[in-house]
Length: 256
Length: 297
Ligand SMILES: Nc1ncnc2c1ncn2[C@@H]1O[C@H](COP(=O)(O)OP(=O)(O)OP(=O)(O)O)[C@@H](O)[C@H]1O
Ligand SMILES: [Mg+2]
Image (cartoon, rainbow over all chains, first blue to last red):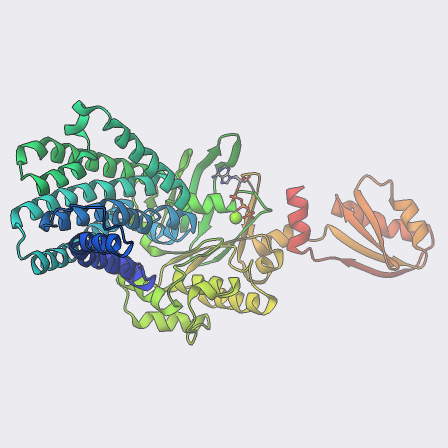
């Protein structure tokens, strides 16, 4: 049943064109990040020359593969993050709002499976496209800089996968609680802001999913230290499962 | 055998008893009209029966299963919501194909049910459908898995007279093989196709009876009389204790009678005592509408 419901999600995703938004934006950032990293210094130098400010001496360090991946993760944590939230935040709440879920639930489809199929679909499709994006970024980085350390980039990407697992769980939770797109986006934003505020306290960092993104940068710039991330990964997964369970429990109690 | 039976079913909202101790029995194989004015609790009842909302109290047995304990019965029900909505980006056929796959129904069935509601050659996206078309698609969807019981929430409310007739005919044609429970506030629909009717108001069941028995029971309560001088007759009748009220209609008097046997004895007496000549005398068949207004008032 979960499989069939996931197929339904996929068909909807195709039909609404959302799949192209996700695929092309991820592909775009995978390819553009290395290119931007490579050519930004040159562009700036040219600008300076054209402006006839020869007196000004700008010393830009030559870009490396690190700049390429820093740029890539910056895009993933900002625009791609936003795209993922916008694409999925209405997944349950809008089905309640538009009254499309009730037909399925009234046919005896288990509410747990209903939600779980959505989460599983989102995880699979997002991970799959992220992987493509990552491969594109790695390829162009290698192409432009002739090197890229596999270990750093894959490990940092792994942290992003964990982070996205948390974000998608939070999306399911918010979407389950809210009764429409706006409400669930509000719930999502509220919780997201709370976690961000918690990063003011440095001693909370090991327990805060938000520090996963700063760790990504550190791992790219300095090197991979798994010990630093262990607590973070475990706690992020724990929060994710709690959010998922709460989302399901809440949906089971709701009137449609 | 009863296909639906509810036992003190209650649904209370914060300061509203949407449903209050409902004890409803729906026999198998009939067309059952669930009648009530706006806000009576029809949709609430249906949502409780379909596991879309939980009763505050009480329970129901549907096809032998307690709805609080089992969910298996749901797959044997076809449900049309009051405002049917579907995924707007799909065509009717695509949508039903998805549903068929989830329900494990043969894809051939999709064309069959679309044919029944006259949407077979509709290639437009559901988002562009009119309300009536959505209603018809909704009915097609209820039939997809060939359920034993159809629960339809106001199936004709969005339709024009032509569409309404078609849907009523369709419902009628399903009788026997399926039990059809439909809610409505359109009295003529009930009169046309229902075997049995329940009337609900303010969350309370006011009656649940076979339509013909109901009519019999309420029959012979309305009399129309025409005499040569209706003013005299009106004067004589107006204070009789067995008369509820009198209305003048064209040249006849329309009487609403409390005690029919008294009326049958007394009226001829009055006519002969006052030397009137009788032109017309008739017991009127009540319509569901008459009964409805009498029951809910
Ligand atoms: N979720 C809810 N919260 C609070 N009150 C509700 C809720 N749902 C229904 N009600 C109230 O319960 C009562 C019954 O509503 P219901 O929708 O069952 O009526 P109905 O018979 O279907 O009416 P209609 O003919 O308008 O569809 C109404 O007074 C309504 O306001
Ligand atoms: Mg209603």
